[in-house]
Length: 265
Image (cartoon, rainbow, N blue to C red):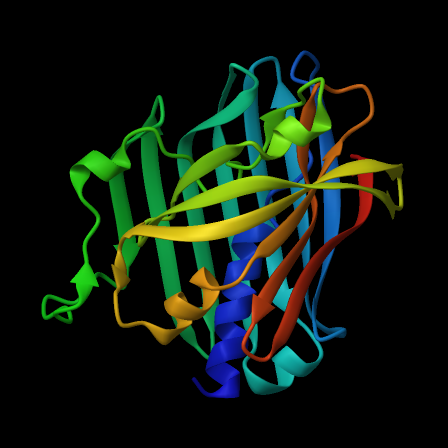
């Protein structure tokens, strides 16, 4: 993959991952804004801002990402993403998830409607080709139950033992692909951002493709052989945890997403 296309792919992935914004306490009506820095090999390639709102048991997350620095020179990328629904059993359960992004003048979009973790309708643009490659593995109807959207799918109720944050498998669907993230404990580490200081639960994450992918994809084989790392923080007096830092290995270097500030709106 040429560098411009690779940078565009990394930034579109960052739009999904950086949207895992910290969630305020479910019992109150409140709003939190989180700003992320996105870097590749230590160089700035993007920035994102996400706002999470909670009113009783209803939530909404909306945000945007734009390329910067080196990525802007090669492949200007921008996008928006949103998720809305209810808070049930200590996690976010989406009714609707939307993603729109543009890179090099080309546009992609996903609009998913869900009910109790089951996908009812998914619309993507551009649509899948009719002449899909022979090694393409489609998403089946059975794989669209008990799933979460990528934007709010990594927000959990904080367990008493921080290590238990990582003892789980998360089933994602973004409109194109179904994949599982298998989390395992990797210790604890301190973390500091403007507006927040404390300890984080660190999880190692392995990617397992389920549907909507090519078996022969070299990019997929690479990410399956790597370990993503996510830092989860318990925020203030809330009983929920969410990612504040993500490290993703890539063929051209390490992609980092780091919360720079966390503030009440």
